[in-house]
Every structure is written in C-alpha cells, then in structure tokens.
Image (cartoon, rainbow, N blue to C red; front, side, top):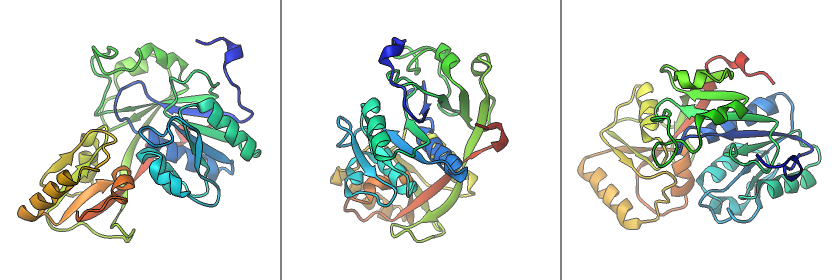
Length: 300
C-alpha cells in the first residue's frame, strides 16, 4: 500500500470497477449499469477509462461531455468509445493517469457527485470510496494462482479490499469468493435488441454466424443461445482485436457467401471498431443489457 500522503483524495466520491482475473469479466457493461443506477437517483456522474490500445492512453483527453460525443472518441479505444456512445450526456475521459483524469473532471464539472473508474482496482494512487470486483462464471478463477502459473492478476486475498463482488453467470459461486464475506451481486446479460449498421431494429433470420474480439467469446455464444438463436460458426479473435487486416475481412466475406450465411452477429464493443472500417460483412449488432438478479442487494 502507498503512504496516505501519496494517495489522491477526490472532492467527489470515487467508485472503482475492476477485476483480478486476466481477460474479460464484464467491467464495462457493469460500469454502464452503475452510471444509469446513479443518474436515476439524480446524481451527477462522470467516467474515467484507461483508453486501452487507444490513441490517448498515455495522455488525458475528454472524449465526450454533457452535450456531445467528440470526433476523437473513435480513436480512444473500443471500450472507451462504447462508454461514450452508450452514456449520452455523461462526460467520459480517457488516460492511464487516473489522478490527472479526476482533476480534469473536478475542474470542469464542479457539481460532480461520482466519478467511476473503469478497470482501476489495482490503481492505488487514488482513494476509492467503493470498490466493485467483477468475475465471470465462464472465466472463473482458474487454479487460484497468479500469472503466469494461473489467470489471476493478483491473489484472491486482495478481495479483502473490495466492497462488492459482482458474479456474472448462473452457476455456483466459487467457495473461494465467499470466504471473504463480501456482498456478492449475482448478475447476467439479456439481449435488449438487435440492430443493423444504421441503428434500425432488425430480427435475425436465416443462417447466422458470430464475430467477436472479446475476452470471453463463450459468454457471447451463451447470450445468443439464450435468445433462442443458433449459429453455424464463430469467428473469434483476441480481445480488443482491431479488424484492420482487410485480407482477413475479405476471407470472412468469401466464406460467408460460400456457406450461405445470411447475417453475422457482433457485439457492440466490436461494432465500435467495425463501424469505421470499410467492409461488406452482413452485420447485425447485439445490444445487451446488464441486469442484477436481486437489484435491492445494491444499495448505496
């Protein structure tokens, strides 16, 4: 732990949404949920994101404010762009230096009640008023060891610093998570709607395939199956894949025609990149909504 004098204490409440498992867990969807939860209560909220693999990761830049999404948002990374596009009217700032991001938000928005830090559990240079640690049933906790022997970014004992554990999935919650006596919020995803590249609602029909570049592709598959849809294949790429290789996209286009695939279902996170890339893929975007099994268990 850092000395208290080295930890920045914001004038507004700071909420951290993080994980201790490498790969996807659902931090960004939960961040969107929390923003809506707080704004519904009348609070003024802003979001800080690292901007991973974006142009502004190593500087601090506001990509949306209470009125607009800025053109720069498209270069800020897939998750940051998704936050800005989904959270209309909510300031979103990117940058690895969270202390500076918070100071910029404090100066520009003096009426802020909360700043939510997406992916910040390990960031100890800023005081957190609340820490949420997110797990996914599919990703699990592995063998319980930290990298490289296991999949944990830090030991499970770090959960003693958490205020809430968020568990995405319908299976049994690991006993190793229960031992820390933290409130565990069971959660999941439901499909809110399907839309085309022009944001028009559509109904997927015919032969379908999936395309994703996310941390837990099986989670996307489960979401589609729960919507009573079947698919022929899944083009799965590494998390945060940029889809800029035209040869790969053309190969997929050719295979879809050959196999008579009518539509390619993708996540909103992947559409944040593909919407700015020239291609002929028959895309349908899957908009999901994060839900808590027992909403009343979240109360602050």
